[in-house]
Image (cartoon, rainbow, N blue to C red):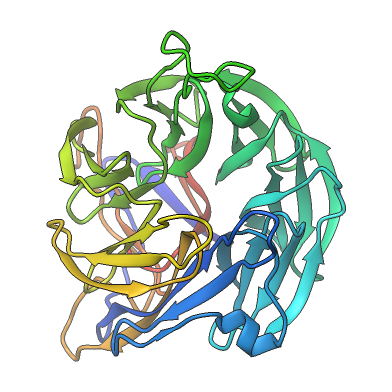
Length: 413
C-alpha cells in the first residue's frame, strides 16, 4: 500500500513528481454484461470497440465453448483478470480481460447465496454480497477461492469499502431500510445504520462520502396488490464514514437505480425513469439529461467521456445500448444480449507528446489549496496505475489527525 503522509504546519510539505510525458486515458473496450432471462441460463457478454464501432455478441460463449450461466450481475478488474459475477449460477468466472477466455472459476458454496457485487479489500482479500441470502462471502483472489462466509443482514446488494469498513445495502428485497457497517479486519458487523426504504446500491464519492441510493417502496402488499398508501419514493442518503451519520438527504422522487459520477463536470447521473442530474456542488437535483428510461446506465470517463444506457424491451429478446454525449445527445447505438444490465470499461493510455495531467506517469501529491484554510481545503493526488492508497493527515507532534483515503483507487487524478 502506498502511504502518503501530510504534515499540517506553517508549511504544507508534499512530495511532487513532475510527469515527463503525458498519457491520456482512452476507452479501449466496453463489455456489456447481459443478464439473460432468469433461470434460463442464457446470460452473455457483448464486446464493443469504441474506436471501430465493432460489436461482438456472445463473446464468452465463443471464447470458452460453453454458456456463461444464469444472470450476469456485475464485474471488476483486479491484477490483470476480469471477475464476472454470475448470480443464479452461484459462481464468479475469472477471465482474461482481452479475450474473455476463462482461467478459473470461484464457486460460492452458500446455497442461499446468489452473488451480487464484489469489492476488493487488499492483500488478495475481497468480499462478494450474496443477494438471495443474508451473507457475505470472503474471497482469496490469490488462490481464487471462497474462504469464509459471515452473516450481514437480509438480502445484501451494493457494497463499498472505506478505510477498514465495508458499507453494505440491505435491501430485504424491498422491505429493508438499513446499511450494515462491517469491520473488514474481523469480518463482523459493527453497527446498522437506518436509511430510507429499499437501499440497493452504495457508492464512494470523490470526497470520501458514502452515497446510498434508496429505491423506495413500490407500494405492493404481501399479495402483490398495489396500494398507493404503501408507496414511498427515492432518496439518496450521504453518510460520513467517520461519524457514521447521514449528513445530507437528496429527495430524488421516482424509484431510482444506478448512479454514476462525472467529476469533470461536477454532476452525477441517476437512472430514475430518465437520466436525472445531481449537482455535486449543491447536492440538489437539477432536472433530467434525458427522458429515456434505461434499464441500466454507466459512465465512461477519459479523454472522450460518454454515457452508456442499456435498453431491455423484455427478457426474451435482444436488448440494445445507447451511447450518449454528456449533453444527452445520442451519438450511436448497438445491439446487445438479453437484459443489458452492467458495463465494464477497459481503459488504455495514449501518448500525446505534450505535458498533461489527465493520466500521470508517476505518483504525484500536490500542494493543498487553499492554504491556509478555514474550514476546508482540497488535496489532489495522481496515480499512474490503480492500487491501494492510504492518505493520512498528521499534526506537528506526529499524531494522526484523520485518514482521508484508505482503499483501492483507479489510475488518474
